[in-house]
Amino acid sequence: MLAEARWPEDGDGRAPALPGFVHSEFAPLVAAVAERCLARRYGSGPLPAGNRTAVLVVSASGDTAGAAHVRATVAAGGRVGPLFFFQSVPNSVAGHVAARWGLDGPVVCLSPTGDPRAEAEAEAELLRHDGDAAQALLILIELAPDGTPGEATAVLLGEGTRQ
Image (cartoon, rainbow, N blue to C red; front, side, top):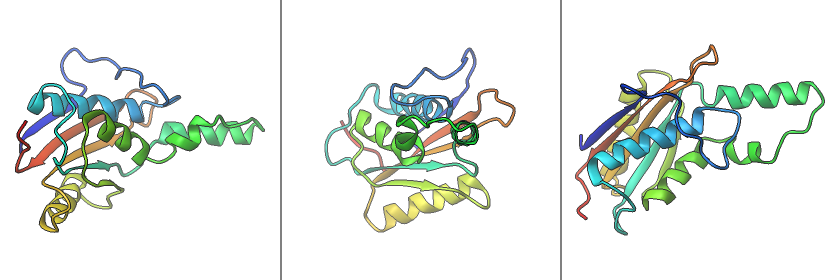
């Protein structure tokens, strides 16, 4: 393990808003915990080209808050804003993280049926074994069901990228 971070940690409130993502804590949590984890290893980004860092977003339930908003809007006969089409899949925020940090490995989203971290680590190992990635940023996230912010963990695994 090269670095690890959680959200929230001591003193954290809600994750900072993320431009282009609305009505949900999912994307801001992913971005905040990824930023914290990568900064612990590398300081500031982006990483040098050829870093082959994969991004894996792992969530059993996904963006339940965004889905609930879309469901309620459609049920009420309202119009769903275009941002929801962009943010309706977890790889949109994974792509945001990859672009911000210059991560040029694969982007993978998993919905685990067993132990989320074990499944994410197995996928990361497969990507590394196949030569698709030198390291992997695992982002494990679940939103709280009661409307309060959820929790996220980011783990950077692999051989490390030299700056």
